[in-house]
Length: 158
Image 1 (cartoon, helix red, strand yellow):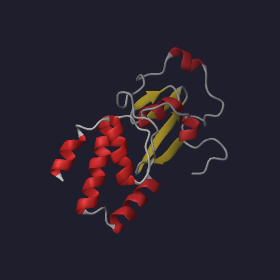
Image 2 (tube, rainbow, N blue to C red):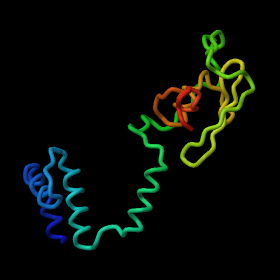
Image 3 (cartoon, one colour):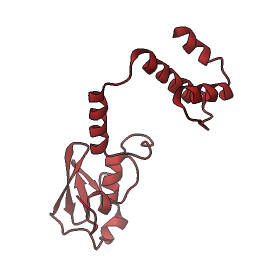
Image 4 (cartoon, rainbow, N blue to C red):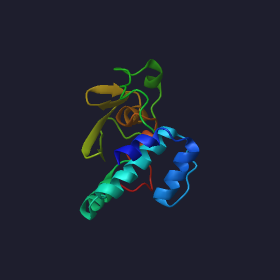
């Protein structure tokens, strides 16, 4: 097995694709050599030493069903918005935003998140953000609609 793994790095992309087809029973158009080597090495190991148990597969499926899936990684981690609202955000209040004092709750990745609606912005974990979208971005690391994230849009299931 060690010899077979060592020879993978000497194969070309075409050779790796051919080996992938032999092991997985399907062709691939992937051109990333490192990905192909890792995937083939994983398959060789699974064939030699045994794959995941049925119990492990079921648990993985359960976790996948309950996970909030990200489509892209955060650019540089969680970056909080400015500590105080900007002057332009003070003058405009979104008409769909609940009245000041309202507490919005959302379950996300096993935690209950709560934000408090203020007259000029929203507060989350001691930081005041100019909008619900800014809070949602701080939580998820990517832009998304705050109204959608906190399920304030009609027709979105909880």
